[in-house]
Length: 253
Image (cartoon, rainbow, N blue to C red):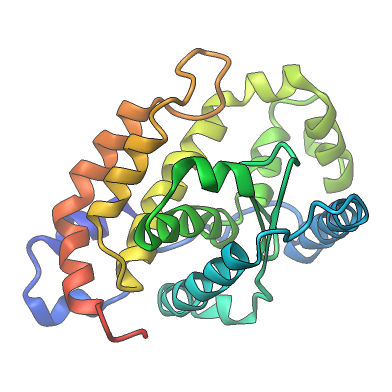
């Protein structure tokens, strides 16, 4: 995937409109099984949040989220045409301990306090959303479970629901796989950066967003990459992504 973006710097202008992302097709477990489990978990969480009066309490934010998602959806479908079948859902919650998360099948959730703390511009918020969409497009939940088979007892002979249950409950299992989670986060930054630019959002906003997120815990217990690692990747990509933005701006609106 990375080589396509590097080559972008050397392509003549007409060639830049090509798709730049590719996605794995060698994952274990059926996509519909993974999405089915995620759908039930997401529905349960939304139901609980609604019962507690914590779901979608900031209507202005919800409107912003939907408007940005609409633009990013077009970019996602350009890069991955099959994603037109995804039924994207996006919600926010208050006092729910959430920052930003994605579940298989296009289910997104954002913490209202987290967004308020960032005080993002629309361009910055677009890259937050694009990052979470990237997890869905790359099927990171399914990929994580595929990899987990090699870290869990008898993993190669277990069903998805059984693998996922242990991942949900075992801190030890997730610590063993911290490197995989961090790789997926960088992958989501990479994909999200391209999606945001493809949708006409200013690439520089990705860098300003990462600066705002710079308080991420760099300790070995952190599941996220260090801010300087994320920033280094974004800076390396910047010139290529600027070209995507210049050629794509206005085409997908």
